[in-house]
Length: 255
Image (cartoon, rainbow, N blue to C red; front, side, top):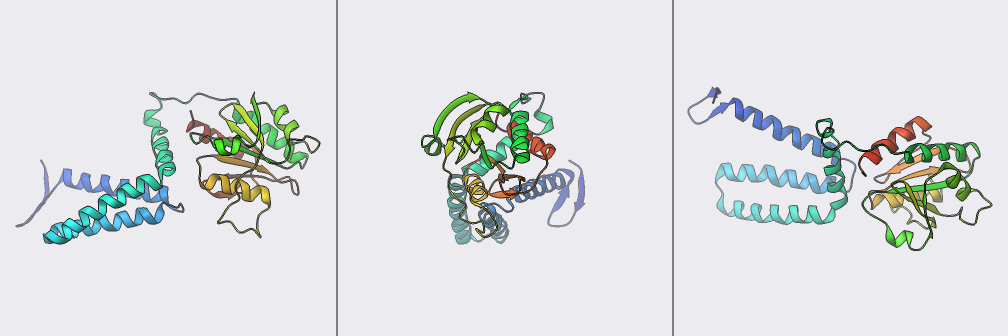
């Protein structure tokens, strides 16, 4: 082992430096991933407990060590239980790293182009639409109250569903992979978004993505603008290319 620095009471080796850099990088990436999510404060609390535990061990404080060890266990268990969707998305994101592509290359899907084409056509017609694509969380409580479709995605079918003369145009369409599961679905409205800034469709799109791993595409009937909601955040007025890019990344995580 190569020693980089040696003093009377401790020494630092190349492995120690590498260890610190790897741990720091992991914490940095986790903080960046959880930033602006409901899990951010819990993650900050875990970091504080981790840093305090290091100090306690250095000072050899037995009572505080026992308290910190028990507190760490409670926080970790609570973190896993309360934030399963965020952790699941994190694992999916790790699996999407280029180094793993040779082992788990996601299959291409026509669904992305079909959804994007339908959204663009609905945008040109200024026909309001709300399309929700789900991953692992099936949203059965929502789809069971809608009208079952169970049909393969096609731009023509999506456009016809949201045509104002269609009895199914109110509410949302729920899509799972390449299948339109249900239409005329009622979604929960966002609890956090400012109601003065968004219409009902946009509030519903934000709301359904706050507590699930779904993504929602919204077409405004007032302006024809296409927006996309994910993880409780809405990106407004996106282009077809931006929509294709976002949906492609989303589908990579769902296969």
